[in-house]
Image 1 (cartoon, rainbow over the protein chains, first blue to last red):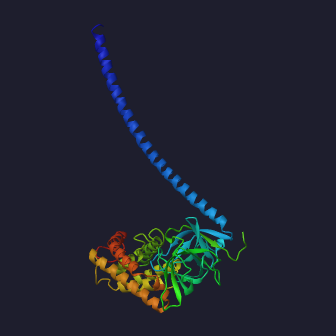
Image 2: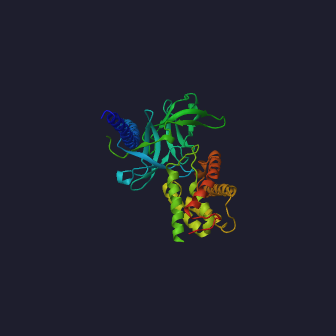
Image 3: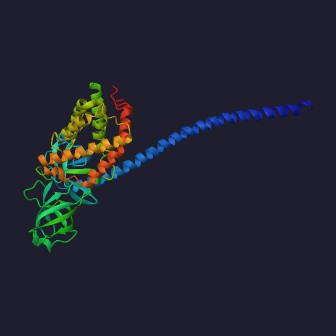
Length: 241
Length: 166
């Protein structure tokens, strides 16, 4: 017994060691599986977190637009920009609202950016669920406008480039002394589709040639068309809110 | 034949939609005309008739989603398809250099047609075109052409020698 018992202890110890090692291997395998599973779950949570951040940002943007929408004072339809012209020589903007939502041809379109309301253009084609807009920067778009401080009138026309300038033509030469850089240009409302007083842009340069009777004013648009997301279509024929 | 026409046209229309959304102004504010590259790649292997038919249908879609006069893009794409389809069996655009040359020629031809249509119908169409935009589109189309030609070969519509497969 005295001789056998230490041996039994030793054998039991060795077998215990091997058993624990074996169990550890099994546990390691299980832990690895759990680790992989947790890694996948963490990835899912990361995606969820990103979705949450995106949703919060979208919510903020929509709240901001909603706040602006309340200040409009004219019956309007809110829409989202869903596409643009597939080429580089036409300047179409496609929105997600159509005749089904009450959109009509020639409705003026405005947007809000950096806390300012600015003219975007007008509706030129309407289908059931979408509509095409002719933006201000298109050379085919003409808007009757007025210099906000001096009240001189002119005709605003686009230069064709999405990030480019607008041009105000046929402005009386007398306005040269009263016009300052940074002055606001607004819609005049005269014989126009556009309601009076919507901001178009700011004066950036004044071109005055001696032999010409009118000025050509370069205007920086209020709206950055390259990051336009939401627009409001004004129902000028509709009731006041 | 109808299957080839259907696949070609579907791919081009898909690219037109991509150009109006995620590809809009992707390179320095310029949109590449990938539908045009697909058209010249297909016209080279399927000949004038199929190319001008799929070009016409794709152009019609472009006309619908753009503010161009109806028939503007369809005429351009039909003529490009017709012209480049004439090279079927005569020139095989296997080399990258030829693919680039073809894409440049197609883009230049497209702009010549735009200017002619602009003069005939409305000068305001061409007013929006700047030299910078034109040159950038030319360069981007040239750079993308080997990729598009390669992808078109993968679809099985065009084989290594530029001959029709289906």
